[in-house]
Image 1 (cartoon, rainbow, N blue to C red):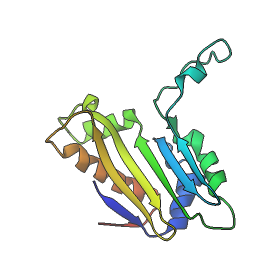
Image 2: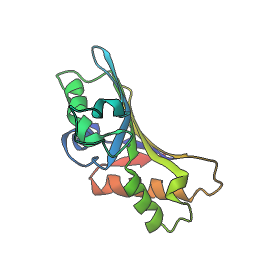
Image 3: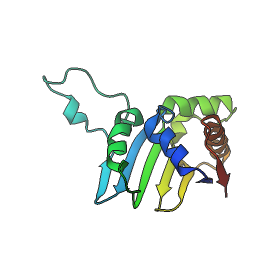
Image 4: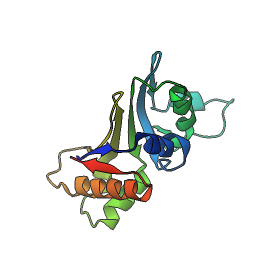
Amino acid sequence: MKAYLIKEVKNFMGKLLGSDSFDSFLLAEAAITTYNTFVIDGHIVREFFTGDVNDEGLPPYDFSQWKDMRSLCFDLIKGKRTPAGFKFVLHLKPEITGQVLSEGGSGVALSDIKAFVLNIKYDGSALTCITATAFYTFLPDKTPDKLWDNYFSHFLNETGVSFETS
């Protein structure tokens, strides 16, 4: 687990809400506080996709893809006033989590990792990102945490986001 203080909030928000930079993530939950607090539960409701009206099949993930939720979140945030705050809980897509594990030479199987989690929090003045790893069971091996932190640091650098770690 590592905390990243984002130095240029406007730049980060442009990448998060205005580009496909974060489309490798799923939205687990969002809470956006402007004139009201809007809460989004990112869990897919599978019953919505069954029956004779929707024959397109089930979505591939348990959570909504960020690329499908990005514009909704942007619409809730945009305006002349800065939001009072927001929180996004994102999960790296499982196939990318698997790549991170295999490229890092981790002996931990993808089936042991529930998610590489990214918590994005804005409190009205500062924006922080906190990485975490959710496991299905306790593992003494901290390699996945280190690989996730390294991947996310590299991700921020590649997307042109300046940050400080703590």
